[in-house]
Image 1 (cartoon, one colour):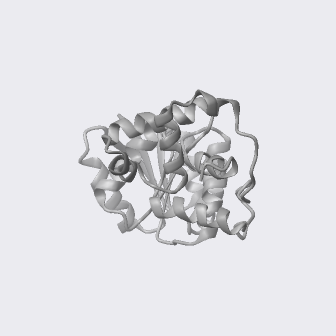
Image 2 (tube, rainbow, N blue to C red):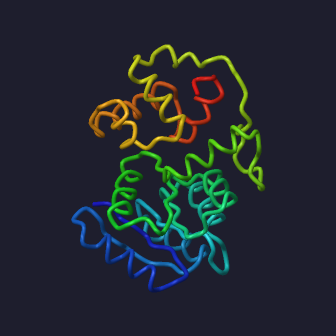
Image 3 (cartoon, rainbow, N blue to C red):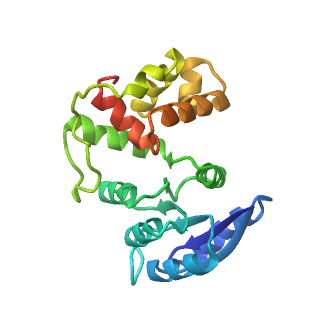
Length: 224
């Protein structure tokens, strides 16, 4: 059972998320908070597995709350927001969020996102991954300077790259272009579960925390 804490300053939004997640057998909504400060206190008290975190809230915003929750290793954070702006994307990633999903995603994608993060994987909406790539290709940094190493540079390939199978290397290259697992599966004529396995192997062999680091590495070493 995955224990989830909902954090949003709008009660109706929290109710909607709760309704979506509560009908799933493997989720338990353990609490709700209306601002970042309350979220931290409830996370310390309830010890959820996942915190669904809004960005813009009173008292303390979701980015700062995420940073503190992750720093104390209290829970994994999945950031949900309607604000499709670069600063929120990069600040959320830098704060240590395990996933970033737009609120206009449908119920199925929300459920899948929580399960993905609960399983220990990072998750980004494909459009957000592509935005990270665009910043790198343009040689720009986000306004906050929050995510280090975005400037495209050619660096020696890490030793782990030699451990990748040809298929894993191919998958890494496609991850680097911003494709989702479903899109990679379609491109390589593989099952999506097989692609997920390859991505997990790539992250493990290269000692990468998440998919974003894989994108950065693919560009840095010239795979993309």
